[in-house]
Every structure is written in structure tokens, then in C-alpha cells.
Amino acid sequence: METGPKVIDGHSHIGAPPGWMNPDPFLRLLSDAGVGKAIVTRFLEDTLNSNKHVKKVLERHPERLIGCFWADPSEAEIEKKLKTGIKEWNFKMVKIHDGMHKFSEGEAVRVAEGCKELEVPLFAHLEDYSILDSILESLDLPVILAHLGTGVYQLHPAKVSKAVERAKTHENLRLDTSGTTYPLARKAAEEVGPEKLIFGSDAPHEHPGVALSMIEYLDLTPQEREMVCHKNLENILQK
Ligand SMILES: [Zn+2]
View (cartoon, rainbow, N blue to C red):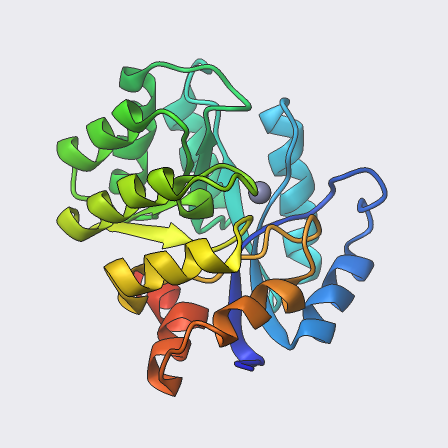
């Protein structure tokens, strides 16, 4: 299995679900799985408190954790908030989730424009493909689509096909492997190729070691596994 300090979990959560406020057990999960670093967000409707919690944890563990700023695109002064998150709090990515917050296509594009300006990728958990398409078509920005575009553990090969189709035509789109099953990940790997996949676990909802073992069975070469497990993500993160 691909393990070691270079492996980055591209999708995980800190401070949630209840019982995971303390980052130590979360960091142990990563260590047990042989995962070096993780991109973290906190899952709360109250984005300010979520992001402040992540900021505090990042300050304690800058060598293991990379912050992802959870944005609600419908919030007032969202551009200013993104700037604070990226420039002052040192977050390296922005997340939007249309199951958590209700926002319009235009509001989502506004956040994507903020990411472009701040030179950070957008992590998009979007069930509404018209929002994703607007973002992909209106600007040149690296976007990672959560859960291969399926939602969490939803067994929809047709949704993976839609995500794959877009990842093939849009150079900027990558797919997160978390919250999915082996056959769907295999389908994505075969159809779009390892250069478009980013390893994620959605920890602590899943053990990162379990999620990582799925990558092992995708029949990738060692070089391709490195791409999925960290290189593809490193290529789009700020240095
Ligand atoms: Zn998640």
C-alpha cells in the first residue's frame, strides 16, 4: 500500500462528528494509516466558527494539517472572508457544499472567482451539475469534485459517468475518491485515468487506511499511485 509522509488525504474533517473535537485521535488515525498530511475542514452550518476552529488546530499541527476554508457562497462579504482565510489564516483551499448551504450559480461562481484571485483550488461537493458547469466554463481554476460526483456512498455509476465526462473535457477538474466504493473508483480510474484522481477518505467518517487500501486495488503502477496519493494534489496547491 502507498503509505508514508508524502501521502496526503485530500478530504477530511476535524471537529466533527461529535466526539472528534480533540485533534489527537484524528491525527492517530492518519498515523495508523501511514498518511502524512490531510486537508481538513470543519462541518458546521456556521462557517465562521467552523473555520476558526480549523485555524486553531492548524496552528498546533502545521506539519500534518492543511486548512480548507468552508465557504457559504450566499454569505455577505464572502470575498473578504475568503481573503482573510487564505491570506491571514493560511488556508490552502476553499470548499463549497450545496447540500449544506443553499446558494445560486452566480454566488458559487463569485466564490470560484475569489479562489482564482487568491490562487487556491476549489473543493466542490456539488450535486447540482449546472453550478459545476458554470464554474468550469467561466474560469480557469483547479476544481476537485467530492466523492467522484456521487454524493456520500451513493452507488450511482451514472453520476460517476457524468463526473468522468467532465473531467475528460475540462483540464481543471479532478475527482476526489472519498465516500465511494471500489467498483466506482475503478470505473473512474479506467475511464479518466489516475492523473485526474485525488485520494481522499472523508475521515473520520471513514478510516483513512480503509480508503487508502481501495487505491491499492486500482491496478495502478507505483508512479500512478504516487500521483493519486499526493502528486496530483501537490501540483495544484500553493507552494
Ligand atoms: Zn466530507
